[in-house]
Length: 236
Ligand SMILES: [Zn+2]
Image (cartoon, rainbow, N blue to C red):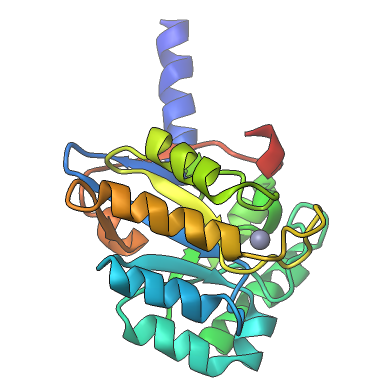
């Protein structure tokens, strides 16, 4: 009885406070997401690649960059991609005040208007209970991911393509970066091997998988959530 009560309250907590990681579905659909852009050099290449493979994606943009490159925001949206929020200038949401978190989200919201949807991805994947409450109050869905290919580090294109091919399943949400706000590994800011790896991966799965935006993916099945607080990419 006690265990059942515990399981029920944990499930309820995950439902209310959990962040979305993927969708349970038997349909061959998945979502690609790109953080930290827009970037004048790499975002257009990613957009061309998506067009080539008839795929759509979700871009979690940084407000400061979006304000600087409004044409890229418009182009990404007009090509049928979804635009979400990744803060104004990429602070860790676990180390700033509630007021600053709300300011970060609202400033980014303004920079991507009128193309934004109410999706938020926290910088560095850092969250606390309080930061979750802030996003709930602002009526944002927090979107994390179930797949990545360590693309914020330096890796060969074919290794990244293989990692993606191994991991992507129906309903997956995949983390990628069309820019890196503050690269921790030298050379990682060059997105060309990610783009080449993504091209190889999309060629390989073409005809087997359809890539849709996160808002579309969420309608394909049961949305899966996890209680995900302070956590770094690297612990995943
Ligand atoms: Zn980021």
